[in-house]
Amino acid sequence: MKFDDVLRHVGEFGSYQKRIYFLLCLPAITHGARMMVSAFLQYVQKHRCALPGYDNDTYAIQSEYHNDLINSTIPYSFQDGDVIYDQCHVFTNASGTMTMVRCNRWVYDKSLFLQTAVSEYNMVCEDALLTSHSQMLFMAGFLVGVFILGAFADRYGRKLAIYVSMVINLVSGLAMAFAPNFYVYVVLRFLLGASTSGYFTAAYVLGLEIVGPSKRIWAGMVIKYFFAIGLLLIDGLGFVIRDWHHMELVVTCIVAVFLPYWWIIPESPRWLITQGRIPEAEAIIRKAAEVNKVTLPDKLCAESEETSDEKAGNITSFLQLFTSSVMLFRTLIIFFNWLVTSMAYYGLSLNTQDLGSDNFFLTFFLASLMDFPGVTLCLFLLDRVGRKVMMCGSMLIGGVACLLTIFSILYLGESYQWITITLAMIGKMGTAMCFAVVYVFSSELFPTVVRNVAVGASSSWARVGGMIAPYVADAGKLVGGDFGRALPLLVFGAASVVAGLLALLLPETLNRDLPETIEDGIAFGRTAPNPTPAVVMTAYHQDNQSEEGARKDKTDEKYPGDADKHHQHVA
Picture 1 (tube, helix red, strand yellow):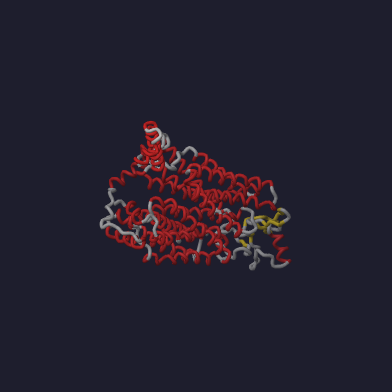
Picture 2 (tube, rainbow, N blue to C red; picture 1 turned 120 degrees about the vertical axis):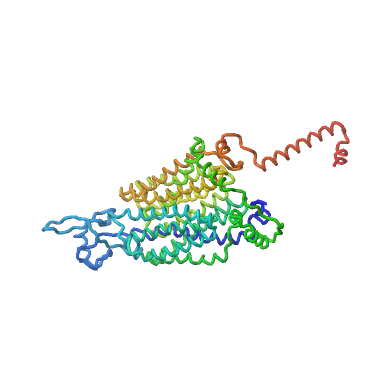
């Protein structure tokens, strides 16, 4: 029996799979927290230059004398009746002449956070881009982890990959909380990005490999709820813990809760079969059958038939995606949609500070909540309206909402900034929906011979989008003013609209036989769709009913007046 047939016999989502799947979803909470913790660790506090020669200077006004000294030393301007101090310059008295120069010491507002990585390593003014570099390196680590730890999981197993990644994550996180300088800090962030992608991806794959084919789309989406719970968790921790060192320690130590998984979570039986370890796979399957109360035959699993030559052929077939104009066009559209989805999702999440809200924690909480309706809508609509419509619709919803923020930011007063926040939240929901759709759509669109490697290559472009996102956000800070606040949202919105419209050029995959070969992929969507089994059965029953009706009419003609008796006799 093939493994999918075994799963159908054992139960595609029986009690055993439900328990294991739930346990595998829990690390997604810490994964979500890790992916967004930089919004708190690297929160840019209000700041100004430290007063020269004033050793106990603070951002908060200490006295009237302190206030006068600040006003005479720090350049300032008025905005909406409030005093805005220059963050990067200070007046000095050189040879009796007041000169404005750049400073190299700062004091920070501690009303929201006592200390962040930005204030500790002074990632402000000329070094303001260091925050973007740090986030970029984190996403670069994520990208590297997908390939290296993904290959590790394929070679040594999902279970070992989860455990090794968690150990690396724990060591790196604990060390980062005590990083002596920025360079050590970003190296450890790189390792955190790689390790969090390692354990989440391995857990995600293991979760999909133990459920039956008809439940995989559902399983692939439900885990996103746990990711969103991680966002809410990090918001609550940030509200309680106002020092970045302590927050990093708490977020890291939560991962230690999953270390006992080594004795709880089984290895993927599907992976064991591909490695020829049939007895181990059968032992796990029989345990699942026992829990699911199912009786199994003596002979279960056949050895994997895929050879190394066939695997090499898969790579060669993947390169063929770029030799056909049809497949190249579709592949580039999918790559672009992955990039834009990730860029907009992480850009909107990490740009919460710049939306103009007075309550950072509430705004981040609302942005995190948007993932729940986004994923729920996909669960209910994906198999009803189709992948293409959902992809285009989610992108357009998010994109148009982001574009509309330019009007609320530029033309409405501060009292109407709730409109900006509402539009940004709708934009976040749209990107969350697209994240749920794009994986399903791309996995169905690519031919079977290249599906795994093609989806992996597609998702790597999501990491590129995540690397671009902080620079788009910082571009708004460089421009400054209200237009600077609107600029990142305009970029995210315009890119989303373009990606959504391009998705309309892709063929629909709902209720279609998926392409097996490259030739099938080229013809996919350009020929009449093959009827699905449900359609075939419906047509079969209709034909049978038509034939039966025709026979009845002939009988009525042959036996007028006694037709009912004849029908009963035949029946």
